[in-house]
Length: 403
Image (tube, rainbow, N blue to C red; front, top):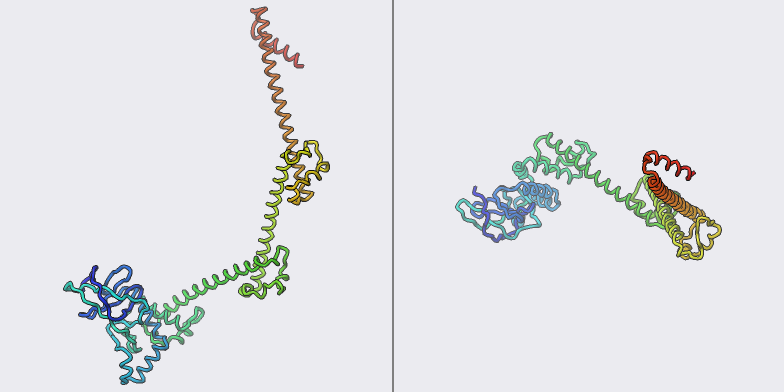
């Protein structure tokens, strides 16, 4: 078999070809062999790709359980010699696996390169209607993965659920043609176990997703109702005047215990948020009031000093427009005024300490200057006096003066 031509001539197809997983099946006019063209990568091959075969097998199984296809098979069996049936149903092509017509198709496709290097227009095979007796031959052509996928599709279409036992599931599918796609009972049981495990996981994921959505919607229901506050109790929610118990979001959470837990969590979060909001608001009021006290320009007629008492200036301070808008509590005003007084006293103490340091520094400078003056005077009178003894006498003299 020659490799497909990478640059083939696009040929017009007379009928709609089969397409699965972006692979389209065409037939060569001379050899009658199928070849496959990928609509995106433009790749062209003689052998059916794995993705094409798997999707085609799934379509075959689905077709088996299509009521229209079942009715056609019944008509075929009841009227084997009817010319009308022969005219309406196309002849079965046993050389290729059966498949249903895809809704997606490529109107034109390249022809694979033949051995002689030429390319011919591909002919499209008619869509076959597969009799049940030909399915065994079709199953033999499938790969093992296609057979397992076909059997799992049979289980799914038959309504097999994860909690079913093997004997219960077997009663639902044993009479189906696809039952024979796997030859041994062990293979069927293994495929059944894989199917039920996967289905159980999918159902559990979907269940958790729905539960999560229901819980989120329940909390949104509580948050969107103005009648629910941090002081609301569980019994208050059952009042129909609030409109909660009649809402679908309430009913989506089926477990009453879960509703109570969600409500308790919501009220706890709401109370914590309210406390945090009040704390931040009180801190903002405190900063505003202290800034007001620190700026004498905002209360020029009410001087506030370290000796000021709050009861003497409270009324004058609270009449300011910016302070009135805060609606401060008396206890907060007292606390923040005392805090400002502590600041004034602290500033006063720092100021006095700085004054003492400057005074001490000045005294040391004067003592050093006086010492130098005395030393110079003594040396001018008696140059033979030792410097060490003279320094000691001067130090004693200065100390006696300080005392």
